[in-house]
Length: 386
Image (cartoon, rainbow, N blue to C red; front, side):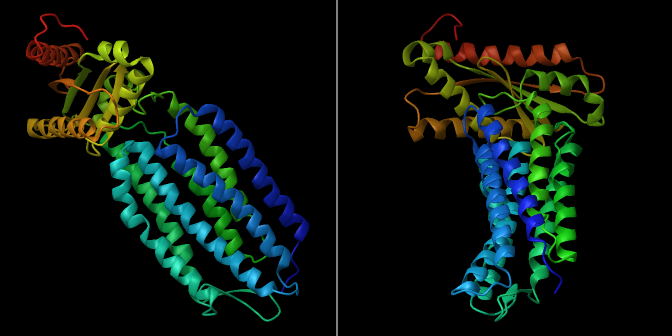
């Protein structure tokens, strides 16, 4: 076996830990409220830090003989395999959430994305008991790759491929901005994994992940300019982008669903503005969980929202509006908030080739205000106040 350059391994992995600590400090300063995407991002940071530390420790004790050395080596290497597969899984979930901002969709995706995690976990546990499937530790306390080590690499690259697929599908829908930086993460990770897999003793896998995380953080700042931090939805700037670049939709028709909160001023006046903010967050979750992958939800301003849906069928738009109403009802019945949420909804069709943007927005607005007038009439209020 070629001698392992321990000082180089310590330096490289130390750089990885330092990068992640700096990123964590920056990330904490930019996050106002922890959402599912923030939690996944945190988990990837912590896994990367742990991976750098555990990998350095595994190389440090490789070939060293002391009481319990083999047991420690087994545990450390099992942790590395599990950390790698969890990182790939969390990355796919993170990409999915950043593209669709839907917690319900996230749970659905996790059902099959966790399958490789369970497979690698079973192989790692069996290796701990001496099967040698993923790895083994010799009597001299030297790490050796197992006959099924390729399985972990295969699943990891499947995760990377799936994240590319998610990004491509979202771009093809025409409603998602084409700068989600999937390749900024995948390329450094793939290079680090390949080189470390080909050359034992070369420690750059986890540091490559740290570099990838840093690149993602930098690139996402431009994407965040199109996001509303309170609702977690896209913002008005994003709506303007979509409508001004509608040629990218390839002539497909849009349905727009315009949404305004009934008596939002009453929520602020009775429960306070912090509860008003909670209402905006709740509506963001309702809309995200109500739309299909070919749609996007946008917070236009204040308590006004919009859903854009690529379809030429009014029935599709009606189905989305019904899901919004149903999810609103469930939110109210859950008792999660002291205030009820009521939404006025209007809908309009937009021909992306010949349609007029102002007429499109005006028609939605008129329908929404008609629905709002009906709400206040049912409440015995004669004026259209919010």
